[in-house]
Length: 112
Length: 112
Image (cartoon, each protein chain N blue to C red):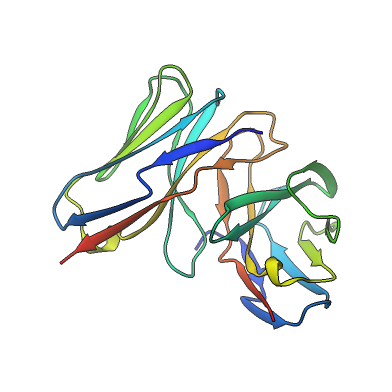
């Protein structure tokens, strides 16, 4: 158990819809990272939040957004969903500047 | 952006054999990490390396941080069935913002 909690574990929705994925980091970790994993692209960095503030953006689409709340949990919002958005979405937390990240079990999104 | 080349893409081995996989980069990293992912789970951190030339073991796993800081390898000795999974290398540049850059993974399959 990494200590990082993600919900929901599975989500099936239709094109054009919007979903929200939720993440609770390990106790004491201020950083939350979101990654997308698809079969052909591996693990792609989406966005990083540190103590409520956005620190870096990776290959995140404009249809996607995230936020980190005062209690440090984070939400990833995916809107106007397309078939190609079907993937595993991972949240990870860690101590900044060590590089060590601890991953949740992921949310598997299927867009039909 | 930075890219990691991880090889081999997959390995078919017999139980008890030793395994070796490696990762190379066009850029320098300050930290190299190795993760393992089981089906339906998030990546789990196996070994983190912080210094060029560093050789670190974790049970039957041994990893090294290349002298040039552009490569790393992971060895698994005397493989057992539970070693099956996907192994990812990851590099961390420092600064904390962008998180980790991942290789595309080595899929380890153990034949009976």
